Length: 476
Image 1 (tube, rainbow, N blue to C red):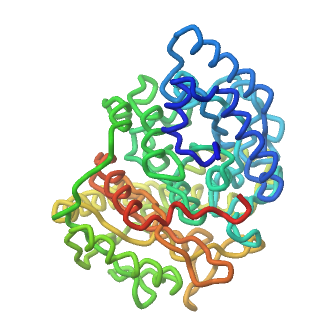
Image 2 (tube, one colour):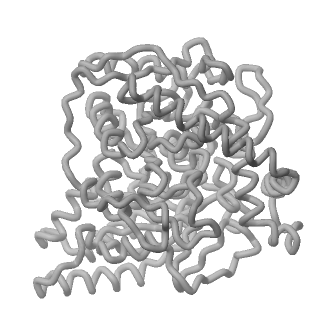
């Protein structure tokens, strides 16, 4: 079935003209038409424009002209990514009819690589929170249980990939928005090192909390998409001066002797100076995954970094970014903004200089402690999130194991604690809960700063050993 072939394989077959770009794009269009009404993942759909672009690619290939390494593969961009001439709503009624005049940098790059735009994927309002629903398009459903959330904020992207409506997708990640929907939908979500993928246009070109990265059904395909997304851009002063093409290389690696720090959640808690509650269903799946690393010859030890201050640093700097992006919208359109976003903006407005300075200092300390920790270990393994997929009607979890959570994102501490350290992290499928129906659980693997390739390598080795990623949603 074309739509479940690997992206690399499809790209190679198109280049060899074993398949036409039109055939490939038409197959994905048919899958969208069949499956999307059940899950609401793709919210702007451009089949005719996509087929026209596929015809142009086939014509170039027929003339022997280069068409790009990803030529003929379709993508639907997250509805936070500006696309010239195509509606981009940010999940907000304020922007329900917004049509940008400029493309985002990754849209430019992927077009140059031959990717065909098929539409846009659903996101929470302003990508705030990891439950994908908004007043413009409604909620996106989890394909493994339509009564559950798909996570977010790149929820539409993850569901579209899981269901074979796209071969891969882009997403963004501030507090876990690539990793969380990867985790909830049995696909791969990779948060690269800040600067790996250019983030332009943006209100703060120096910002490093939010990054853009790939979602795919396999680690290999995530790396393939990253190879076209990554690389320096003069408009983004923090981009890493390393070409993206290196991520197209083979990921095989001998794992014998690789040191894995296992941050255990057995007993329902991630231990440390700031204990983090973890749902027992998540812990059970991940504890069964631990022997996989030992079977590959890894040295696995229970250990965790000192992340004291991560919650404070993250909440302060996140609130500051909400002021930067949305203060003027709050002044003009308060009644059209969801309460949690209003709360975030007002949290930022209440900050003073000493509080912001302290958060910046804490973040520097956290980076240093994580760097030193990963001098002793090659990788850190830990939960992506602290809960499995929860009911679609529930905006966010407010308790775990009877422990009350302080904010609407605190069920994601295990993800956003890593964010604040600026280290690359991936969610890779690890297993399923014992629920009826079973729900996906991913494993988070964290690597050294800028060792994005190494993170992809260890994730691919784990994926190959478990084969969990091959399990498809029943509706697909």
